[in-house]
Image 1 (cartoon, one colour):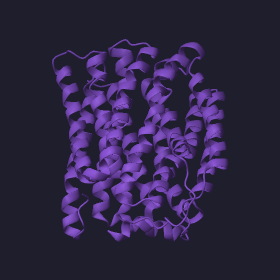
Image 2 (cartoon, one colour):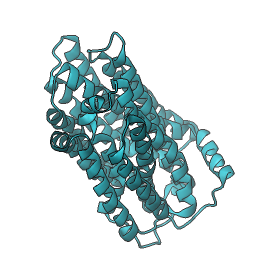
Image 3 (cartoon, helix red, strand yellow):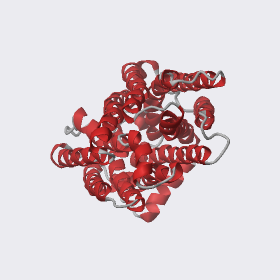
Length: 412
């Protein structure tokens, strides 16, 4: 597939792996570091579980909407200036989170934090695709996201400790410090990788997305990633309240157990980095989605027999993280490789789909735990997770069919 080859190999400047990890990890880190504080924040802001969940749902929605614009803008102006602007917005949002006097102000600050931080999340993938062809990009994205997963792995544990000593603001202060560091790294250590610019006006942005909307193969890859993300965000939305209410875990204990899913994600990304180029994208995608489904079935089995404890809930989540880590790098690489000239737009749209489904999953789980028959049980979370993995499997199995229909070379 000659069209899938990078068109920037002639340029020598390449960002270091550390810089790519830093810009990519800041948004997931901001999303997860305050999870152990959610129960305490309900008391501080005199809010219900559904109301405090808005700080997460608003974050997801802001990321989803913002990425639709950052990708095409980076196709026109380059990756570097867009990332620098985004990191500056993230720093401002973090400051506002720290000084928020009420829940409404905190939600608004989280929106700004999310809109800025997501530039690294979406454009980190685009930078890798600028420099490498589809198969090598899948392998490189695996290594980048393995490193990306390290900090979100420790984020809940660190957030739990900071909450105990400094209250809910401790995690947000750490994010401010990290944001300033990433902003400086973006200014001084991030070279431009996108040299063949495209002119992007409003019509061109719409045209780019219209082109992607008409690519069934793109949708097979993108929906595989999006529904896999739905499963993960359903876990993020439900686990803090199950841990605090049903399992009676402290903030520090929650932080410890939250590490298991991220450790699985690290392991999955390591396997993707080692084997994606050798085995092929499609086998990695199918393997990852099947592993994720197994994890949901294991948790459902424990819940069915009233045997759900902290270990029986969070240890199977290691498999969910493992499956996501195996599947997502190849699914994301496939999505941005269908139309190489629209890499930025495809990366932005795919990331937006992931976070949009995450926002829906988080909101559904919060609603199910507010005033329904699922309050005080794990079944609301388990049902949404099962739905997500089922849809991800359907999308994954459609990849071969779309390749055959378009008479493309299979992603081997």
